[in-house]
Length: 585
Ligand code: ARG
Image (cartoon, rainbow, N blue to C red):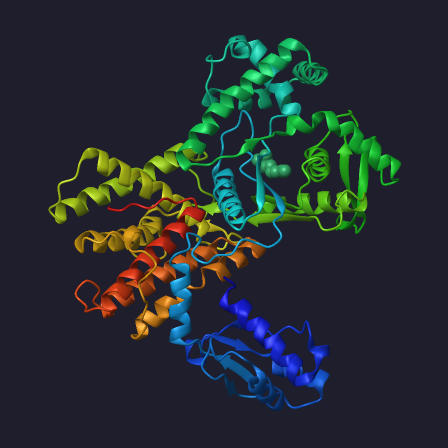
């Protein structure tokens, strides 16, 4: 099914061609959802923007369009307003027919893209021997959601975990462990990630203070690069240890992605430098090999270099990203590459993309984009920290959300005089706690910083996961009360839209496709959250105004169907955010 907006666009363009000639083909109808329901459902400013081209007053143009537009099946007669805006209001019969079509469609009318792309989403990407922090959590949640939406639209998505598993820090860590805890380098259970993080911190201090140690660390890097068996083995153990911890988080959050860390690209780094040299882009500056950037200057106004090989021969984060980019386009055949990291890395990506572009590594038709996000702040408005000032462990953060919701749930169950099993309560608390953390993140425009507040994210009212999950559960309780099996309803139910709230709900139900195609473009998951939140609100308004189980036929069946469609839309939308639903909570 083509979305309503697309159908209107086609009809609009046809009207333009009939009214003003074939030269109008391809003209943008400038159709957008109406800013205010008072103006109908969609509006167009095209008549105003065409005045110059057509040499006619906008109202005359608008009248001509309205005269020729063939939308009798979709809309009420369009209304011209002000200087020449055209307003469209959808017909109830049209809406009912659309709902009838989607009710038998498991995709609820959301089309698959006509041209599926091969996309890579680079997200999560924590660093070995360091804790995964809230920035990685954001990347994980946002990257997973973007991947799910692209997959649902029919794209082929490779989810890559660009783990920081390579670089000089390993030399330092291995050299240090040889001194203080050699067992960690030979046996897998000797240390956990917490220990490693501490060792890493101490190693760094040692490194900064002791020259002999610096040399030892450098030797380890050389050994690692050269593939010396015992250093290699030690490195693998360290990775293993970290990976185990990361997996705990991924399991908890139901995240699936392919690990392809920085080390994967290590063998390709020399060629990146050689190729840049061959292309004449490489400059040696104070012993370092670099490419001078366009549009990035230091405070004296001189171009900044992007260093791709340091004077000691080592490579950088940027070199690896250049190699990764070449590989992803050349070997993986990616057509769209999406990097989900904090906004602090915006310059890094802009610089890497620029060098890759100048080197001709980004083929035509390939889109590379950095999807930045803001910081996670504590309720004090500063970077999220524990009370003692340490970085917050993700595991603790999630457990806390679960525990707090559990308290709320116990209280509610008591108040309602219900009896529930331990299993039920544990499961509801776990699902809602995790969902609340995910939703709090996704519902913000990712470009801004957001305040991590358990109270806000767990609130049963407002734009939160509990609110949406309760809306879903409420609908399931209607089906239980009326002994109705939504799944067995079949496609025969005729939908009637008579009450205002029914119409509003119907229109909203039909907008999922538009919302998803917007998210696919601008990669802003908060749009989908807002859509689902408004859906729940509109459902609640409908449910207040219109009796469902107690109404007469044919309204009764029609309203049951609206309930079912709302529940399915919520379920689908939430699943794209990585959130499961609960029938009862
Ligand atoms: N490991 C990096 C970090 O923790 C993120 C990597 C993002 N992806 C990339 N291709 N650079 O900041």
